[in-house]
Image 1 (cartoon, helix red, strand yellow):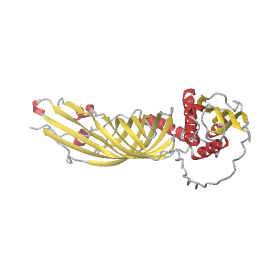
Image 2 (cartoon, one colour):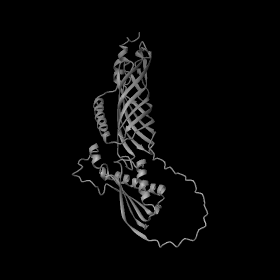
Image 3 (tube, one colour):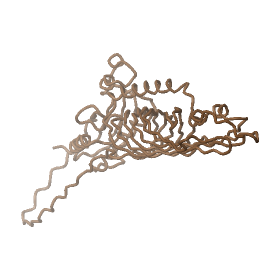
Length: 405
């Protein structure tokens, strides 16, 4: 005589049942982080681009073994398969250095269990599996730590498809529908760290949580831990320097009396001259805020400066980069040095000034032109960034001689 059939709907409600003691708290914290990062976008620069990427890693789900055992006859033994390979593909648009929107496809893999009843009179097995995949749309808040590392948090919606499969032997009967499926809209959240190899290519390490509704009425969570790559398009590059080829003048041979000898050339020693260029705060700025790529407006300003020096015999040209006090001292020192190197390279390549006549130096936050009483605060608000604009500059000092006119 077979063992009586128990309430099968409850007996099979076991896949992806994960406790949510901290889920609401986690979502709230991520929401606050996202709001804080988005509010800082008012101080961010116009750094927009499209990007694509992909991640691969491991997914983990919790299977409620206690419920399985309580719903089966005898003393069942349960074995779980609660980890699998997971991956996702994504595309996004970054509005500035602090905020982006991402959409993508995810596949969390397959999970399952097998329960075996032990007493011979009640022998039987019950197996269940679930496959999960779907689409998502996330808001991503990013916080750069320096020019390579950044941390980010995400909060979004995902539309997941859950496909269940049940089978049984012996006294245990499978549900009336052994292959139910369900599509449901739910939330997802995550945290991660990004490292940029170049302006275009970066690597991400992420931990994400997907809220899942299965096909038989259960709600639970699946965690995904992954490693991925991101490729960015439309990165700004300095405008190419156009070289105008002038036609060679015709050679005209004129027979004329020999000219009188020229008067001796008078050499005038130039007084040291210092020119200050705004780094990023006016219409002739050399760079975008926080960047070291020379803008077209900066190229024109340097071309004008080089034209004024035409005909001079330089002893030395000193290029010194400065930053404001926002950010770490180490990051500011690196940024000021890179900006000075970029200006030197442009004067050598475009104006033809010998490289051994130009010295590039980075001074970071040193020698600010503003006073602490004028620009108060530490956070990079729009008001503070504007107030500290005079500190972000590149100074060029020239000493040398030129012929007298």
